[in-house]
Image (tube, rainbow, N blue to C red):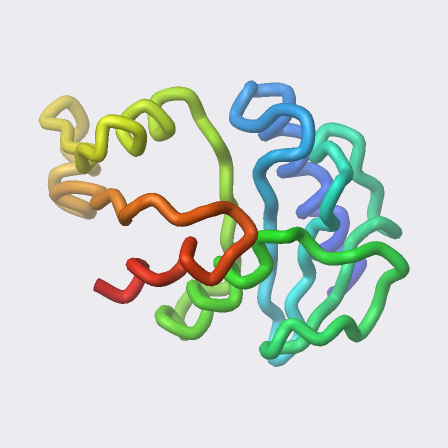
Amino acid sequence: MSNSIRSEIVRIGKMMYEKNLVNAFEGNISVKQGERIFVTPTGICNGFLSDDMLVVVDENGEVLEGSLKPTTELGLHLECYRLRPDIASVVHTHSPFATGYAIANLPITSCAYPEMIVAFDQIPVVAYGTPSTSELCSDLGR
């Protein structure tokens, strides 16, 4: 199972890069399996990931496997898992449209897609937090 998780993270990372949802070293992915969390490393472009580059951490962020450092946004992923025990993965992109809404501090709303109306009503924007700090997660639980 862990090999398929690793392969899927690498596949999604490459897709994110090819679709311009991330560039250079931004964006990150994690998958939670039990008490183990597979996460992309810091300082590696998602478009050039390989299975052996992934890091495995526990729910406290302690490295269990891997020679690279986990993403600097690991705290964001861990907080998402803490707040939402029902989720099994986190994909953090910097898509141009979502980034635009965030910069404008506007929730994403749309009447164009029935799925959006039924499933979400709106996607809220959290307050700005300095990347790689606990400040980034301070507004998540609201």
